[in-house]
Length: 296
Image: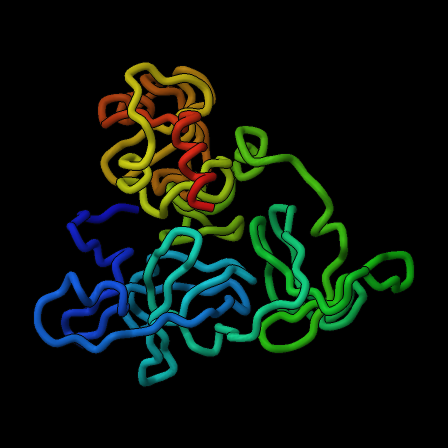
């Protein structure tokens, strides 16, 4: 995903010229009369679609994973809210019914690629929702419950109680090439950020292990440019990004295969097209890591 970056990028700077509303922190930079908005904490109740406008038919620009922290900027008519994800400051419109304003008491991360929330602590029970790697479960007790042969977390999901097997939260591999390989074959989805459907920059943000902004052009601007790629670098194309497994092989979510796949730059028709359109390579340097730690 990509867009044109401006001094006040409307993807990350909360100002709406038509409604004349803006984050209070931006008001000093804006001319004319604006209504100041004071962001309040919110959390995604389930896998929450963020759209370009408050309309179900509008393009999906991103997703908030279950349990991800957000900021509620403005409640709009028709059951919509203008929101911002806190991990990357990305803006979008979400259904208000998918938001919770109650902070979790206890939480545990989802470590598997995909999973489900059940209405009762048994695998035959009704499925309440879907989970994916990176989601955060709001658990209702400090320890799992034993039901039959399995241990279950009792969780809050979609405004109701549900149950999740503890296997969904057990330690797995760390982000990087090994985790990215597990996403092979995951369907491509514009704006997607989960193993149920993902786009190129969402995959890099979720599984590369780097604290990246949301879109491909933002990621290219963030990383340090390099001329010769190595394993772990990101490779950029117009409106697209992938992960270099070595000097030539790239793992990426793409609309050509409508899935996450691996190509070799310069090999085969698609590989040659990719090689011809490379716009640069980016690397996560120790200096960038240090700067990120200082901001945390």
